[in-house]
Length: 330
Image 1 (cartoon, rainbow, N blue to C red):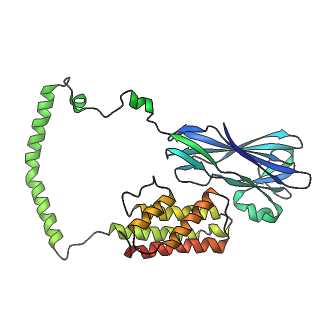
Image 2 (image 1 turned 120 degrees about the vertical axis):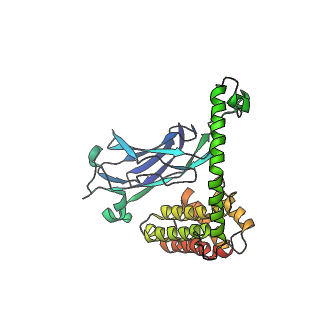
Image 3 (image 1 turned 90 degrees about the horizontal axis):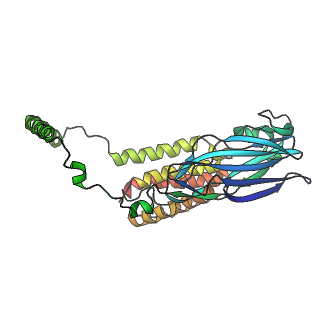
C-alpha cells in the first residue's frame, strides 16, 4: 500500500486532527478499479464533512460514491473514507487531493458513529455551521502507476498481428467459400445500377444551388463549447466553495473543443502540452487562455483556491477565447 503522507491541524488547544491518505496499490492495470483510503482521527462530539467523490482528473475519475467505516479510538474514533477510482491513462496518473472539514456537532443531524460524532451533508457544509467554526483537514495529492495490458513479455513472446494466412488458412470449407464469393458477385452486379442511380441523384442535389446543406460540424462544436461553459457558470460552483469543480469542468470543456480543432491534439497531451501545440497551430494571441488553463491545472492538482471574482475572471478568459476562435482555427 502506498502512503502519501499525513496532515495534522489543531482543532482546539488540546486536540489535533490527522488525515492520512493511502492507495490500495501503487500500480494497477489500465481500467482496473482501486481505492483511495483517507483515515481521520475524530474527537468525540464532532461533525465531519467530506465530498462524495474525488475531483475528476485527466485520465482518472471516481468509479462510484465514497463509502466509510469507523472504529473507536481513545476519546473519539478513527473514520476511514474509501473512494473507489478507475484510471484510463497509461503511465503515472495523479490522484487529486481533497479537503475534509471537522467541527462541533451541536445541533447537526446525520449518520452517527463513535462517541456522538456525526457525518454532515457535504452540500450543506457552509449552511450547517459556517466555515469559520470548522477546521479544514487537507488530504495531499498522490500518484498511481497505470500499467498497460500489453506487457514487455508479451511482445518478447511473439505478440504481433496475425498473418493473412492465419486468418484465411487452409482448413476451410472451400465449397462454402466458393458459394459465398459467387453470391457476393451476383449481389454486386444486381446492386450496381441502383448505386449508380443514387450517386447521380446525390450529385444533382449537391450541384443545385437550392440544395439544403447540413450543419457545419465546426460551428456545431464551437456552439456546444460555448453552451457548456455557460451552463457551468450558471451552476454557481465558484460561489459555493466548489471552485475546484468549477475550474475542472471549465478546463475540460475547453480541452474538448481544442482537441476537435486538430486530430493530432488528442487526450494524450497534458493541458500544458496541448497549449504549446495550440500556440503553434492557431494564429492570434492566446496568453489569457494559457494563463487561465495553467491556473486550472494548479487548482485541480494543488491547493490553490482562488476567490469567486478570480475564478469568474479565468472562466471569462476561457469563454472569450472560444468565442473568438472561429476566426483563428487552423
